[in-house]
Length: 336
Image (tube, rainbow, N blue to C red; front, side, top):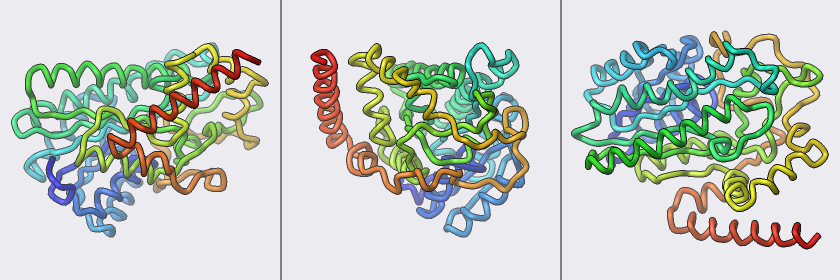
């Protein structure tokens, strides 16, 4: 892979949250960036921040659920900078509601943006990367491996991202095409995602990211690391890896943990009234931000991510340690 300072990087969902944090990190390292999102005011504000950090930026307002928009995004990136080295599929939306309370148009929209949007991104960039090579980074979620209540459609879309990434990776390797595919699996991250989501929870309250909550900078570092040193999967936040390990070892136990005392439900609800606006079908009219409203609950740094997840050998050792901890937990539960 080229050094970050020599790369051309496309990021979708770049106006806020993880996408904006990644853009700032790439910009600080001298990358040339093409930023995409639906809300142009927030996108332009993000571009100004990236330029101040040292990056060169081109902005392309894009709805990733529209193939024509994504195709235009890829072509504009090549027209402006001559090539694409890294493509980050990051745009995502959500509805916090039980499945029975989720409307059909809401289901369709989440799948269109979260899953088809990433497929469209890969489809648009593959022919442009085919000869010179590059990296496709698909931002999924811990919910790509372990679904949570209130998030049935979102979790389904992220499961789809994981499955799509695995199949694409195999096909590229089989055809000896020098394109790497990395899947990012963050735990709960303090971004505006939760205030932007449509909420239909008990009591009419705003959703809460399930603790522990991590800072967007951890995910940004994982994305930038993958652009220069691709890995198969990068788990961001120790709880993301722990959930994955427990899901593989004993998903029924994890079910019981989430159901005991309504744990998995209560910890996703705030005491604040839900906002009246959301970004499901149209962007929120604000200037965007990297971080959300949960700074006091956020861990400033994920030691797991920075020490283990970004380095393959330590990551494998950390996984073995987590498996051992999970096995001990299972044994104690069985003896109780």
